[in-house]
Image (cartoon, rainbow, N blue to C red):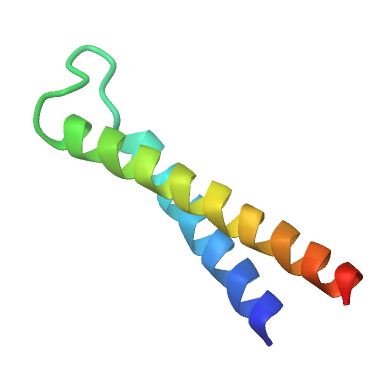
Length: 65
């Protein structure tokens, strides 16, 4: 149950990354919607990294027991 929820969260974060990548304007990175999209893209990437770390730590905890 926990693993499926984590995978769902990873999929949502990946979807947000893809959506925000389409909103980035390379001519003015920090202007208007492009700046917001860049910040949320980085935030979603951090979420994916943290959730993957959580999955790895759950596997390690399972092996230790």
